[in-house]
Amino acid sequence: MSYDMLVMRFEHGEPAPMPGTAFRAAFEACIDRTEPEFHYWHVTAPDGGDASLYGGLTDDQLGSILFNRFSTGAVLDLLATFLNLAGAVVIPPDRPTMLADEAQREHLPEELRTNAVVVRSGADMESVIAEAPRPDPGALPSAPIDTKCLQCPEDEHK
Image (cartoon, rainbow, N blue to C red; front, top):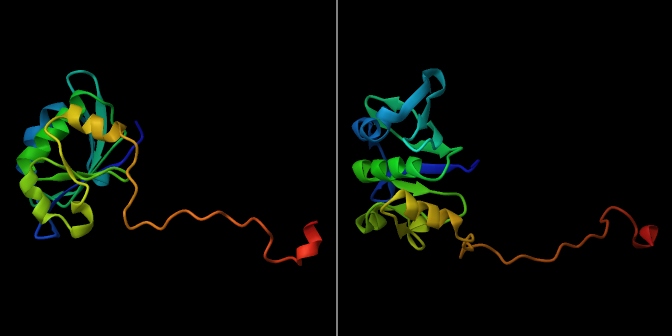
């Protein structure tokens, strides 16, 4: 699936580093390709599912991970394991933020707290991803598009 999810950790509303030990514990056994110059890892889970991960591992810490081009199944279980070990959350572009534990909610930035949901497994993540997108409570309602030409006199297109 070509879908990008951002994985981060927060403390008091601010981004916080994630431990490299958690990354290795969750993913290392399944890493089958790396491109260090691009901060890239490819993982293949035991069920054959896979994902591309991008993130800079510096001083045994990660600031964030871009989790993309992933399949469903066990690869999302690997991500769920990482969330638990790192105290991290998943921020999809059009779904609620996914927490490993309810206690993480208070550390999220305000705009991510409201609709956040707790996920315990890859199957839970699949369910959240499969849901219809939730409207952004701060978004403006859609307005009809006026298709008349603004550069031409009104009678020119009649």
